[in-house]
Image 1 (cartoon, rainbow, N blue to C red):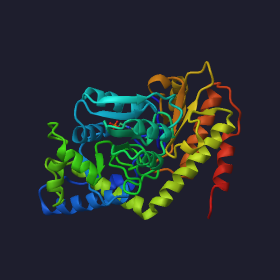
Image 2: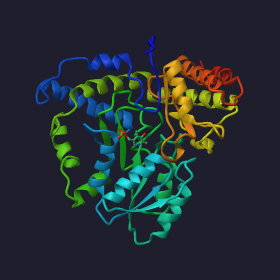
Image 3: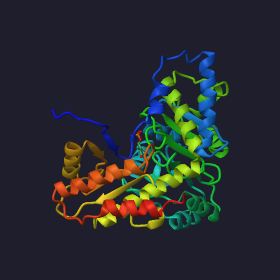
Image 4: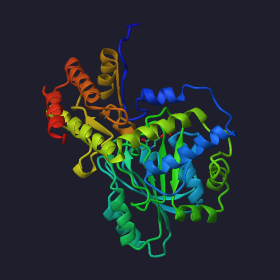
Length: 391
Ligand SMILES: *Cc1c(COP(=O)(O)O)cnc(C)c1O
């Protein structure tokens, strides 16, 4: 065993590194989740989430992974036999589609090449065609973590309105929230799905759904049997700061601290920081003479960058070398991108120097692995960071 010194670089696009402040906030005795101290915490995190989701609507917090919050969204708003429109933007969109299909939902899954987001023009065309309003929901992944392409949610909303269609807009912002701008109310989203271990900088274990009045009404009218995920069951005790079953108490202490951190920095500043770090990362990729997977500049992810390997070189062998030599974890290529891409996470608790450390690790790794590239990616990133500043 080699002895590791210093910190591990966790540069996968989630789980993201947990800030010391958040770890300290969680390092405490569990409290009575039916007591007055908990009620204060419950109120604080339920309110605080609204600020982060940019909504006045209720945000539901489950002790679950993001996948649980996906299922909660489906079982509350949809029933077997319902039709929905989804887009094959990558691995996560494909998984959500499979889950919907398992629930007997009929998915019109618009094929994609995993290099861009959902196309608002197709949303408009498909909904305009659907004169009987059979399509119950448009389900879109905001930040496709497998590809590093974001979908333009505000434009998807406009497309739905343009078609004059009543479909619900259900958005997976599991890896977008807290890193990429996501405006639940202003963008007219009906359900925003998220979880704790990406932009919220927490360990895994919390799932979220922010729900519009329209989504809540659809859920009330929905006769599909459900229990653990039922929104109304949650919303009743939430009024008093409580939960219908044991919540993930210590994660909620962490959540309170993470929300405080995001609001202290200011959401616009948080989003701008992610944009700046993402631009520097793309500058590095270009400097190495490699290719960013996302093809559409208006859809470049502020959260992560997926990098295509030159033909004949295996991304996972490269990742293994980087982990062994430099103690840095990079994201693997998922599903059909296995071996073809590696992903650099630049989300949550990260800054210019932590990014430069990560990019240096990539450049040294490319060199050590004998992968054809140009030197100068790190320099290009530094130049991008210098020119990208306004202070
Ligand atoms: C991580 C992720 C998920 C899955 O979340 P889990 O917590 O692993 O269940 C779903 N969608 C996107 C876009 C993700 O990034």
